[in-house]
Length: 379
Image (cartoon, rainbow, N blue to C red):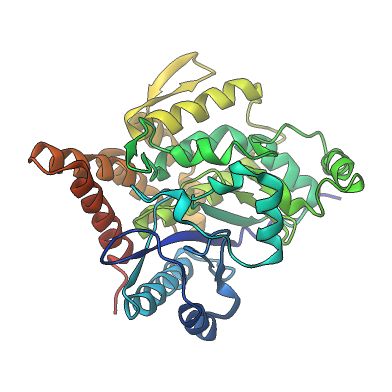
């Protein structure tokens, strides 16, 4: 009996930093803010590891229009309610200049336990990301597609980078978030598994020993969700512009359908050693859209703008099936104009070149993030 075609339904989770609109430094979410948001959004919104972070998640979506509407509402309501309290969310994976020493852990058992377990690494987790879930209901198919779609994780990271600064320093990376995240255990690329059974047996070694209580403590860049019958992409930075987030979600969804189509023809995407895939992840983290990635089949470094054209062609049939052609074509705009990281670096350099201080330039970068996070959200 063959595998039933997946639903390919999807949802987007985003994490935001909360800042004071006067100082632009981290600000803890007041109880009044969270109560107002939860009364309107219910379980779609919640706290994160630090009190200055807010997490949102869309409903299960089947069309790009649903995702745009739902994510837009989530961002809009946070902007509105935070603004009443002199606060603003920024959709960036790191804050340009704020110090981690100013952060307080959220008073929830899960986060307090994590803080104790992780030590100094936990105190560095002032980072925000974007996760995309796609419905793959069959367990074996979920593992099979996870093995194959790992190849494209660097491409999705390149499209999302938003963390070039850390505590007032230019890190030289387009995604410093990943450097912080990968200090945690059980992060990075997942290994290749031959079956869902092999994945579960590996997981149960840690579960049975009491090292972790459930699979949500496995923080790979791509993982089978423990809570939903989905494959969860976790490598991307949170996108400052909502259009960029929707493009990446569409790409992940289309790539999974493309790989499923190959499977139906008894074909697969070629498998490569994890250390080669990790090399491309590093190149994406370091250089972003300005960089190149290895095409391992050709043995060559290929410019990202060329890779985008290949991705568009590769997923053309799938974008048409899902009605997300506009979102997929938006990748060209990202490749041409850069990501949030590029715009942050440019704003900083322009201000410093104009004679402003480093601190003034960092304030200017934060203002840019505030503006772009709330842009194009409608009334």
